[in-house]
Length: 265
Image 1 (cartoon, rainbow, N blue to C red):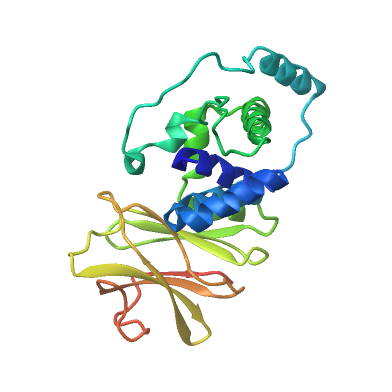
Image 2: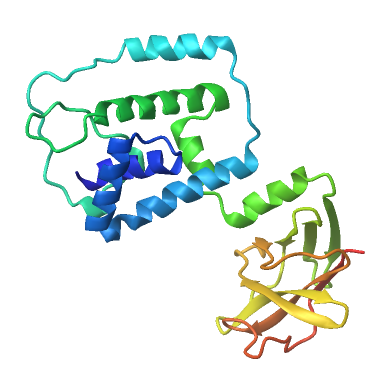
């Protein structure tokens, strides 16, 4: 089994869609190649991201007919031997390459259900395109969105979503978005001043009189950033930003006055 084939198995494992034979092959390959674990993490994170932001949709009856028609048009058996070039597997883009072709091989140690797993991969891909309406590039971009962007969408979809904005003396602005039901909060900035290399912006929850560190962030050349606060948001928190030494406050408390402070109560 090569690495691309293992990546396909990892996707099936994350979906709980492997047969018993394929699950054994997956576990054996992972035990023999622990450096392939990144595919396991990537598949699990992709499924978690999808389940968090996509509502279940019942596909129309036409989807099944279209799917079966597509499958019927795909050859089910390769003719003749197939060879693959000797490439550096570490540099291969598995997502762009797509599933490896199914090639009957009398000497192969693959489980008998391997072909059925390929059909599952094909069917799942077709359904994703038909139901969600995503192209391959859009789907890849969707899965690789930053965590802060995903959190912002979840906040905006929550029934108790709220936001508030403040302006800074130099013309910059910052908008805090929060939802008590999700426990998430995100700060979106525009036009914040650039900092020197030995400084960074740090986020804080100010809860009563107590500042709680909530992560550091950087802005782009235009002072823009979408930063998710680490930790759970509580109703009434003040969302603040200070300028700290690179890496964040060394003692876990603000070392300067806030340049942004957004009240959420």
